[in-house]
Amino acid sequence: MSGVIQLMVSQKIASAGGSREYTAGNLILFPEDLNNAVWNKGYLAVSSTGNTDPFGGSTSIKYNNWSSTRTTIRQTVTVTTGVEYTLTFYAKKGTTTDMRWGVTNTLNQVIVASTSYLSQTTQDVWELVSVSFTSASTNLYIFIAYDHGSTGTFEVWGANLDLTSNY
Image 1 (cartoon, rainbow, N blue to C red):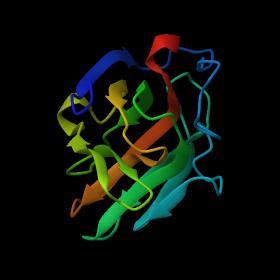
Image 2: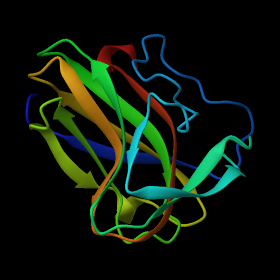
Image 3: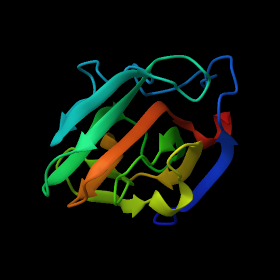
Image 4: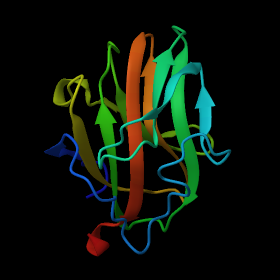
């Protein structure tokens, strides 16, 4: 499946109550705390904190793209080459003009080209973004926000990266 990307946006969530369930092998650290230092952020500012997350809690952060440079929220992970992984996270559009995810190796060589999920999201509804991919590199940057030149606000929350077979 290398090189084949399936983007699936599913499960509209307004305020479902409860909490996010993660797979046992989630490789993402602090999936609900994007202010944690494990998340590398670039060219964006916090617009507001304590916003309602997809499950009715108050852990979401609204971000503001403030630069025409590359806006990013990423985390470094280690995976096994040649194995299929699935990345899921929640997204809400806000006022941004584009939203993308992507995967590179730690040399910034593209594993999965940044792909827009803007058309699958709305301003007031959380959407679950789910993407499967196979990597040829072991050390990856997982971008849940990756953009060039858009402006406006957006929210992302609750990232999960695990073997596809664990879903």
